[in-house]
Length: 302
Ligand SMILES: [Zn+2]
Image 1 (cartoon, protein in one colour):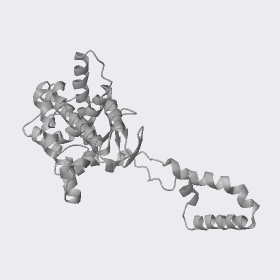
Image 2 (cartoon, protein in one colour):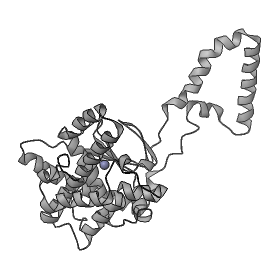
Image 3 (cartoon, rainbow, N blue to C red):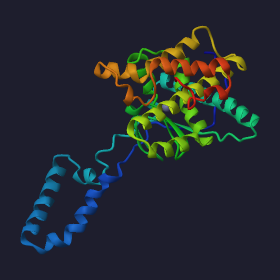
Image 4 (cartoon, rainbow, N blue to C red):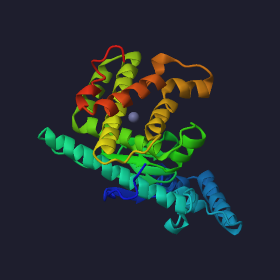
């Protein structure tokens, strides 16, 4: 992919190395204060309290910070200095901001053509865990979009997984992942995600999953639309790039992931679609370059 000369987006929020505190762990100290009067009234309680104080100072002598554990400070991982980030990670962050900038170019243009305004989303880089408008986000969940704060979250270690665990290396494969999440933002702006959520609430489990598959495949198709523009308007693609994206789309299909994890696939539990379907819908967007080609909701078969 020819990306180095591309425009960097100003919508990247770098929160790598940020410490995430779990709100519930601070409750220990509050709980202690609440029961303190009761403890002081009874003999047993006073004994318990004295025991606690001895335990606290004893632990202190041993170098264990019990108060820190109660308030949550003791369990937080030590903050990582931005300077400690490897050069490889810095280059990845640079790459991500170019891809995000390029999706902005595509979707600003496409929304404008429809007389609409594209609201550019923020992309958050994090490491390990992050607080989001949708609750606690963790690296193990893979990259995700939160419709409530309209932000895309990615821990760059996912790219190592994509390469080593899923056998999908290459920069266009990495770009496709971002373009897919941006696809969810586009669905959110167009009101598609809301409508699907409403339908899912009234539906049974299997039907709700089927709707989720259609939503995910549409995001793949919208990622294909970005690929189309990046290729036609901005000549970013090189030989072999398309194969990288198609390989990545196939590698993270539900059937292949389930077979890897448990040896067999259960189609009713799919929420993203099969490898073949993801492959096909990315191409539908990429080849046609028309959003109208991404109507996965009336497609039969998918
Ligand atoms: Zn998705």
